[in-house]
Every structure is written in structure tokens, then in C-alpha cells.
Image (tube, rainbow, N blue to C red; front, top):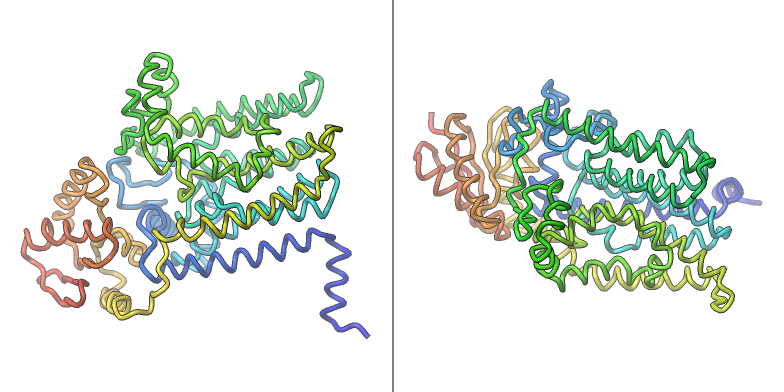
Amino acid sequence: MLTPFKQSWIYLRKRFGYKIYIYIAIILYSIVFSAIMLSAHYAFRTYAWDLGIFNQAFWNTLHGRLFDYTSESVYTTTGNFLGVHFGPILFLILPLYAAFPYPELLIVTSPIIVALGAIPVYELARLILKNDRVALLLGVSYLLYPPLQGAIISGFSLEIIALPIFLFIVYYLIRGDFAKLSLAFILGLATHEASAFVIAFIGLYGAWHYRSLRSKGFQASVIITTMSIVYYVFAQNIRVFLGWTQQPSLWHEWAIIGAESPSSVPFQVIMNPIGALNSLAFDAIAKVVFLLMFLIPLAFLPMVGVSALLPTLPYLFLGLFSSYPGYYSIGSHYGAFLVPFFFVALILGMAKLEKIPRFRVSTMRTAKVVFVLSLVSLVAILPTTYVDYVSFDSGDAHGRILFEALSMIPQNASVLTQNNIFPHVSGRANAYTIPSPNWSKEYQRIANETLQNLRKVEIDYVLIDLKSEPYSASSGTLILNEFVLKWNNYDKIVDQDGVMLFRLRT
């Protein structure tokens, strides 16, 4: 007699087929990476940029201040996050945050959202390669893909939300399911103003894929591209309305080529070819390694289905011409704009190889190679990727001291702290931080200006940790010297192992 568990398993296996294993893999993946990132959070290895920013914006929205946050006044005159990056999809996450209004909710949400991309990968592989077991292997390979982990460890971001939606857009476009495509298209545009460019290029790929003016798929692709451009113009105007200062990035990513913003890069490439070559050559080895990290785990097969890489061009164009390492590092969330299309290109590349008589390589054998390469790459790369983010000794004596200091700050008090502590106090309107002065001289200037402006606020508490990692500790040192000691109106109530808590003298 079958046990209830076996009966349930048989039912699920018949109901979902091999897809049930994808669901199990998604659940396991979400649990593992949620645990890792929660460990990082409790070890003070999550940061204001971007977890603290989003947590404060969500918290303020629940308390009547629509996506307000305090850490980037250089980019917004109103303090509204939607003016800096227009991502109205955040309203869909708000009910979840309302049920559990803490940064841990966002930490757990990130790997779940990323893992959901395994579903369209599975479905697309099943549609094109006509093999459920191959589709299963590719779906699991997606979860093992090293650039995917880089997106997760950088924290909650709009790019992460866009990742699985891009995959659904491509899947529904190729499948010809235009009702669901419409929904995915709208959600995709709502993730980030920059998503409009990626989706516009998905439309261009769709037009190439169908290549027939009479095809509904071709017509839908043209509509996607056209509407994406219209939406981008709309989003830019909304950003200005919501307080976007239009301040170029302080990283000056394209200074070598003479461009101040992404929109000016194409013009400068044409007008300044020497600068363009110099910008491409800047940190060239790192840029080559970055591309290899996308191709090696997939056995370079995306190059066979290279047409599906068309939507990667906007990001690759800007990233490879930049001098900002975050744009060409797999330890960054920006890579989320690339991952979906490498898997689409992989699937199409496998389908092409299967049709070439002289190769005669089965898709199952190819899928096994991809699975093994993805697994080996993950094992080899993951420790080096995570080392800058994760410390597993959150329960050590130093961590306990820092948590005890945090517990002494009342919820209704204003607090100034450094980058890595900010997420723990960001669930309030009056939490403040400064950028690391080590980032650049311009960020050092902004940090000093921020501290000057905060003198008018009368911060109740100041918490710093001089023994944290260098970028955050440098912020703590600057806060200590240029805010606490310079103005000399704070009493020290904690001073232990580099952790200092100051309270405003009354």
C-alpha cells in the first residue's frame, strides 16, 4: 500500500512531469542562497547600496512617504527613489513588505525571484529542443550559472527583478502566446527605465526570428520595440517630475571616451575613435575574463545561437566602453541584464547543432556537458566571488557588541551610521549614511557635504565600527572626525572593540 507521501509524489509527477524537479530545484536554491545572504546580513556584509536604500524606501512608503530615502541627495531633489530609477514594479512587492517590513524580506526575495527564471528556461528548452530531460538539465544549469550568483550577492535590485521577466518575454514571443507576452512586456518595462532598451532589442530579435511581415510574431516584435522607446521617453520625464537631478554618475564611467552619460556614449564612440579604443583597452583583461565567465560554463554554445544575444548589445556596449569595474564583473547585479539572453542563445545554439549532420551530437550529451561545466565553474568561482561579501562568523564577540549597540538605539530616534550598518537601521525615515570616501575624491567631497548638511538635522545617535571592512570603516572614520569630534556635542555611550555609539548631548 502506498503511503500518502508516495501517492502525492506520483500525482505531482504525473501532473507536472519533469517540471516538478525544476520546482524542487527552485525551492532548494532559494533556501540555500537565502541562508547565505542572511548570514552575510547578520555579519554586517550587506550595505546601504542597495539593500538599505530599498528597505528605507519601502518602509517610508508604508508610512506615507512614497519611496523616500536619504542616502543620494546628489541624484534627487525630492528624495524619491522613483526619480532616480523608475521602477513602478516595486508597488507589487510592497504588500509582501507590508506583511514583514524588514530587510530580511528583501534578502530572501532576491534569490526567489532569480530562481524563477529556471521556469522559462525549462519551458523554452522544452519548446525548441523537444526533450523534457534536456530541458530539466538546462533549467538546473541556469541555477548553477556563476553570473547569476553575482547578481544575488550584490543585494536586492531592480535588475534582479527584470531578469526572469526578460526570459518570460522571450519565451512567450517565440511561443506566440501574445496574451501572456503582453503581461510580461508591461511588467518588464516597469522594472527599470533601462529595461526599455533591453526589451526594445528583444523586439528586434523577435523581428529577426520571424522575418515575415505577415507574421503575428513579427508584428508583435515591432510593437514591442516601438512601445519600449515610447515608454523610455515617458519614464525619463516621470523621473524629472519626481525630482531627478540629471546629475551624471560620480563614477565617471565613460570619462576616457569623453562621455558624461549613457546617452552620449554612442556619439562619442563615433566622434572620438581613439578615445573609444582606449576605453575598450582600459582593464582589458578583466573585460575579457568577464565575457569568458558568461561563455565557458555554457561551452561557448551561445556563440552558435548568437542572434539571440542581440538584446545584450545595449548593456555590453556601455559596459565594455566604461572604466567602472562593476559593469564588467560577475560579482555585480548589472550582469542580470545579460544572463537571460545567454541561455536563450544556448538553447538556440543547441538546436542548430542538432540539425548539422556532420556533428551528430545529441542534445542530451550537450546538455550534460553544460551542466557539468556550470557546476564546476560555480564551485571554482563562487568562493572568490563571495569572499568580499560573506563572513560566516556573525555570532563572534565583535558582532555581538555591534548588535548590542544597535539595540540601544530607539526606533523613533534619528541615526547616522556607515554603509554596512545602515541596512540594520534603515527601517525609519531618519536614518542616514555617507558614501565611502575611499571610492573616489568626488565621493569624499559628497560625504563631507552630507555631514555638513546633517548638522542641521540634529542626529540623535551616531554608530560606527572602525573594525569593519575598509570601505565601510573609512566612512566610520570620516563620521567620527568630521561629525562627532568636530562638533563635540555627543556623549560616547559605547566604546568597545572599535564599535562606538554616540548619543546627542541634551
